[in-house]
Length: 165
Picture 1 (tube, rainbow, N blue to C red):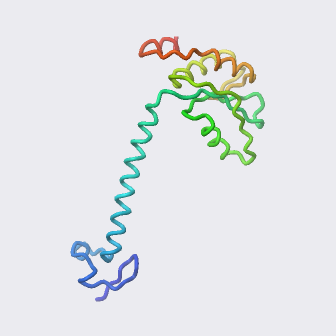
Picture 2 (picture 1 turned 90 degrees about the horizontal axis):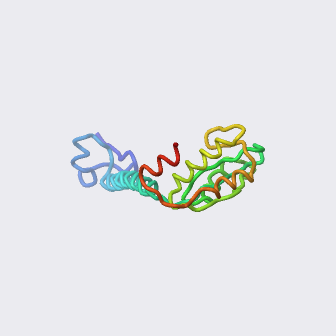
Picture 3 (picture 1 turned 180 degrees about the horizontal axis):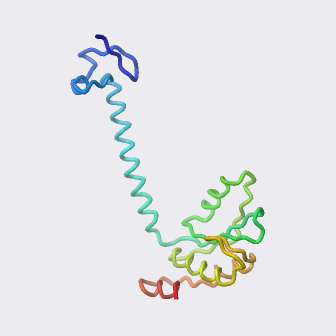
């Protein structure tokens, strides 16, 4: 019985069909077998690189705490953190057909997680209403909250006490 490669449709023979593929009844020529092998290798490496990149990226402590507004939701301001606030803003713009998100304010911190947690705590205390990281407060209050956070690097229990007590 004559078999063809399922990828390139070339007729398979002993010259172009790998012995391992013959035993496993995989109908692919040596050329396509090499291409598929390289593709699978690159997929594995990409997954590995991706997880390493995300882990390394998450270890970066420095970054910005920012305030973003959208005219569609008057009075609501998102307070968040990012390594690059402008890049984060671009990510929000893709979800809006009007590209109407606006970076209201940003400040750089040595520990962006601590600063964001402190900003959320302060904003939650004075906001009329909260929804996750979105606060119903004035623009001036959001800017003042971010500016009021100290930029001192603290360690361990100092961070926890300051943010949650």
